Length: 399
Ligand code: AMP
Ligand code: MG
Image (tube, rainbow, N blue to C red; front, top):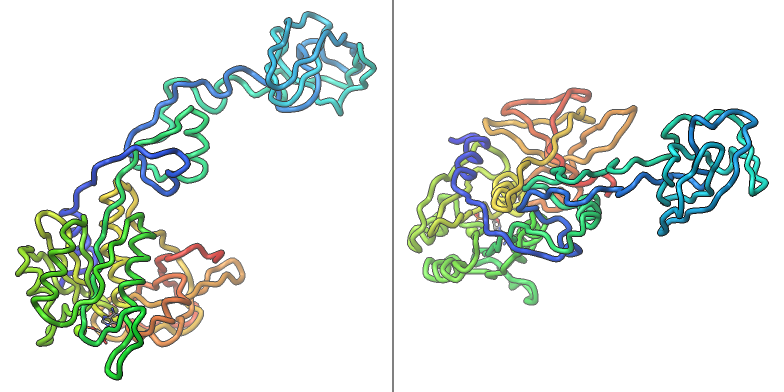
């Protein structure tokens, strides 16, 4: 049986970056930059004041020195003249420093009786001056391809005058649920039916990973119907189905994938929840057959599909952050498979403590709702309270 790492390596070796597209800067949040960005601007373009005060020559400053105010310069204007020895100019935050000046004395540090101001002490050269190019110089490589565009990146791009940016296209991901027992949203489950939840959690995971989800709905356990849906999913870049990948007579997804022309590359992975997971390629596009249990489907998506979608978008870091926590209670993983246990995290005495979110059955979706992360626990291992445990962070802990 493959390890999680081996399976992921196989998957990543078979996914290719998607094409790129140009989008408006304001719509680029969370997208992956597809071009290196070099600055064509000097930011700030000239030395300017970081305080309201007086532009001075540092060499003129000492306690009791009286300087003559020869003008004023506000943000948005240029100084109309330089200053000479014994002179100063009223200046406001963000205004360009006049020629001859090399420091600013904040207004609260002078005795002002314009046209003269009296200084209280010495001011260092450069004080309260933001030099030209302090932030960015012409030619600086400010963002590399693969950078994820967040608020700061978007602000920086606006500074450089970029109203549009080249980003990776979002992967289109077709999501299919299989199982004759499934009733989809909008229909009350019949006496032998259960609600389809996987389509919805998986589509949400697709969107969280930057993709666009295409809902292929529910197919019953019939080879012809599953095959027809798989063919319908061909317009997508990736197909993700759930259930029907085990060894039962009605586990038909693998056969249906092969029937549609897919080449299957892996099946069983040494993990719990989720052992049966199928990965293949259909006309060079990745296809995933995830297990049906709602938690198994989500956890295998997290470990295998998400990194593939990020790689297709050109992301460099594919792994979620991992934190070292201590077990806040006994955490047991019996059996020969590596465990990915749902835990909540809380900080106490400067340490993160991990506690199980309840019963770990792979059908218990509520344990996923409460989970901040997945504790990675080796096979046949029982952690006691206080033992170290590594946790894959699934979400922002401030949530
Ligand atoms: P299977 O892999 O087909 O054996 O399914 C495993 C378990 O997951 C069964 O109990 C199914 O009823 C359940 N299951 C399969 N698909 C879904 C789904 N889309 N939503 C909720 N539960 C499902
Ligand atoms: Mg089934």
